[in-house]
Image (cartoon, rainbow, N blue to C red; front, side, top):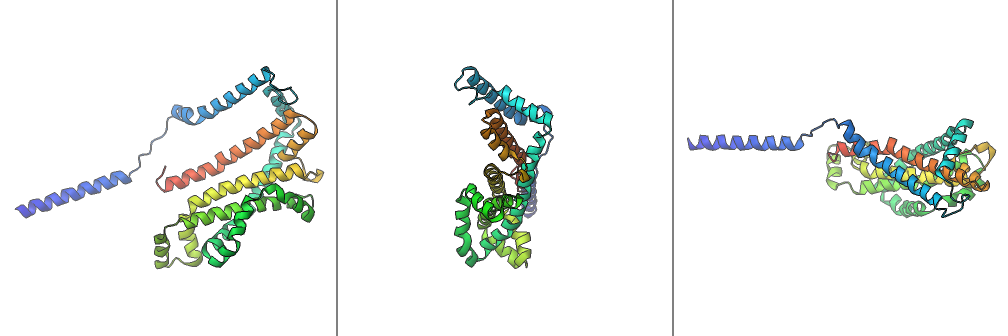
Length: 292
């Protein structure tokens, strides 16, 4: 009788433990109300932008600097309106964005296998690992003069500068992600037969994804900054007018409103790429690991 009671008690405890584990694994998903979404995600950036505009306009009213040095928000808006009516505003943006994204894709195709090789082959890591770190710390603008001499004033020169700026960041990000993989994962993969390319696809890349994604974000930042530096320094009618060239044109014309317009557009493109591409990827990775 006592044995039966003990068995029943153990069964009850086991059922309770399983129920507790199921409760820990269960993720409650509810649709966020629209009002809460607006308050948490939309209202803060709108408030920040409104505050910046208010401070900017206040500085203009206080005349802390001459108007040719500090244009008013209204003057910059007039530049936006003029460029829109002339049909050139979207051309400025697309010229730079198309170059930046295409150059980043090239850098992704080169930096990813390079990072895998550097992380997994000791001799290659010892040989070119320090070089990649040195290239990552080298300002991208330093590559513009030799790229112009080697390739001329064309899109190939732009892509070369982007690659030299972005590839080291992508490769180093992947190397850092691979270095943080628990050795147990790699041993388990080898035991199951996941070696070579199969191991890289099914074990290494998924486990290194957070570090790799951080490298991609940094690689895009380097791509965008490298492109802006190239467009500012190298100008040619054959290259068209991108955002960097728009910024340089504003300086040459002594038009601070045009300079501010170019700066704002460069900033907006950077924010838009992060919100539309990298933030959703980051949320997906965190959600797949139960961190979101």
